[in-house]
Image (tube, rainbow, N blue to C red; front, side, top):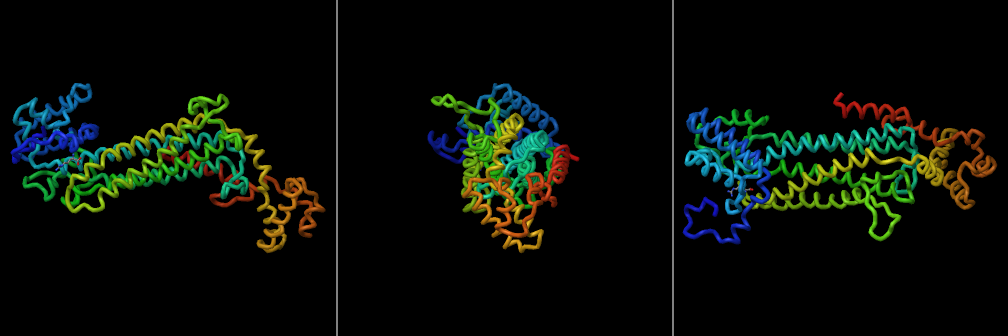
Length: 457
Ligand code: ARG
């Protein structure tokens, strides 16, 4: 049974013990918990709150416990409730009553806040690294296929020609914003809460700065009530994760579409696809579908924690123990998704011929025709109307725009001349020579810039 029952006359109900325990999931925080305790014990000794020899005993006990956990020799007893109690109980078992001095000038409330902050900082750095890997894969794929042209879409209708590289770099930008969001969140997670005690601060002459330095924190929390009641940094991670998963899900959707027989722009590598148990011809883009599906649960974790936090009076409340499982799952899901996507993007094959064929089907140069008339003095709105009628006539005849004769063009506007046949996919791309546009020379520069960002230049 949990050992904080000094004031109670009855043992804890068995079901209640199981209901309250968080050890099954917060054991994952052991290394942060132990690191925090080691820093705390060292500081207590420096301040003369415990003796140097007591600190040495405590620290070597904690180090041994860390080893036990890492070697799978530590017994996690649910009745000890959480990772803090489990480590402390084992410490006292190993080194005797002096182990009980570790909890001087500390509460589980500031201890858990510390542990999750340390976990969050590491999660953020792993996430940013995962994002970078995927960005690198996107840039590599774009570079290897830098001349491939495909239809760009709006409303999922073929709209205008774009370079595949331009399309892929759009995702690079999304992931770059994601990395920025995680970086911003890091600044607010990087705050050391120990010293807040249960809620009011502690009644000892501690050195919070020393603890912050030992644990690599940039700042100290400035209000003890806030420090133990704050889970904004978890919410910020989850919010950034939800947005990042939304981006991954959009990419997933495109890969699913592009790998279909109808599009055929890419082929997903065998290592990243599954077959069907009944239809032998099938190659399913399961990885992308699963990522699209898993996005839902990451959104769910954000909503769950926002809901947990919304009615809580200051300071710590047990409701907050519900922060962890969803958070851990959000981190794991995002990291795994980033990793598989990097591999999937790296290995997929682009079918340039199919992308080119799709360009012929969609009257994608219609805007260029309108621009052509506008260039000859027609108001753009009128030019748009003329080309709309021209396209509808071509559709009725089952012809592409390049199959119409000059005489047919002239029926719609006398401004059309021989040079109308110079309009091509290449001229359409080259014309979009604005910052951020799909003109090949702009995209080449954007690619180089993206490469520089990944390489940290
Ligand atoms: N297991 C708790 C949590 O996850 C740690 C803090 C417990 N504090 C307390 N007073 N019950 O939030």
